[in-house]
Image 1 (cartoon, rainbow, N blue to C red):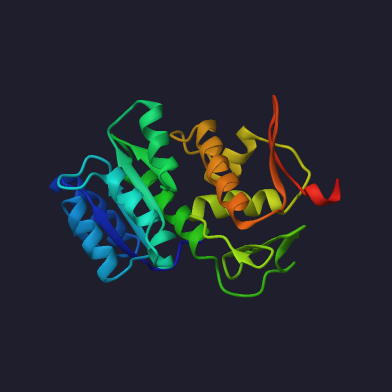
Image 2: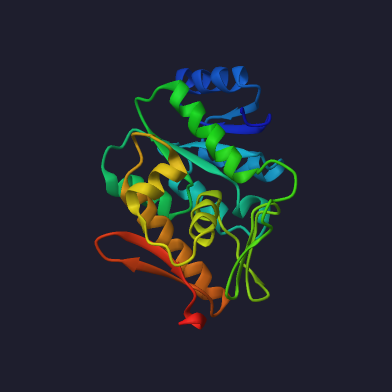
Amino acid sequence: MLARMARLVIAEDDPKQAELVRLYAHNDGHETVVVGDGRGALEQVRREPPDLLVLDVMLPRVSGLDVARILRADAEPALARLPILMLTARSAEDDLLLGLDLGADDYVTKPYSPRELMGRVRALLRRARPEPGPAPDGALVVGALRVDPVRHEVHVGGTAVHLTPGEFALLALLAAEPGRAFTRESLVTDLYGTARYVSRRTVDTHVVNLRRKLAAAGPGPELVTVYGVGYKLADRAAT
C-alpha cells in the first residue's frame, strides 16, 4: 500500500538532483517544496512544517548536519519529531552515523536509485504516520514504559518522551516482545527491509539515542545489549 499523500521539503543545492527527487515525489502523489540551502530549509519547515524533510548533507549557508541538529533541539514538537531522510555523497560510515546521531531517521548515499529513494520515503512516512484506526492490541506497556502506536506517543511514568520516527519504530518493535533478544540483522530487516545502504551500526546509533532519552524521562525498562547477538527490552522492576 502506498503512503498517503504527504508534503515534502527537498533541501538540495544541486538543481538536477533536486528536480529528479521532486519529479519522483510528484509521481508518488506528494506535494513538494524545493530549497537550495540550509537556511532556506530551516525557514521553510518553521513556516509550514512538512510531513518529511529530504535533506542533503552538503548544503551551503547551513550544512545539512547543522539543520538536523537545530531541528532536533527545537522546542516545537512538530519540528523536533520531523522525519528526516538525509542524502549524502560521503562514503565514510562515521559521517553517515553522525547524521543519525544528530537525529536523522534514515539516509541514502549518492549515487542512488530514485525508486529506492522513494521506497525509503514511503517507509519513513508509514512509520511516522500510522494508518488511522484502533490498534488491535492497544498500547504496548512494559513496566513504566507505554508505547502508543496509534497516537505515536511514548511515556515513561507520566513523562512524555519525544522520539524521531526511526527511534519510535525501533522501540515499538522491542516493546512488542519484551525480553526477546533481537539480532542487529533482524532489526535492520524489520525496520528497513532489504535496503542495501543500512548497516547494523544504524541500529546501534538509534539505541544510544533511545537510552539517553528514556533515562532522562525516569526509571523504566532498560535497553539491554545482548553480547554477540543484539538488543532486548528488559523491565528492571520485574527482575
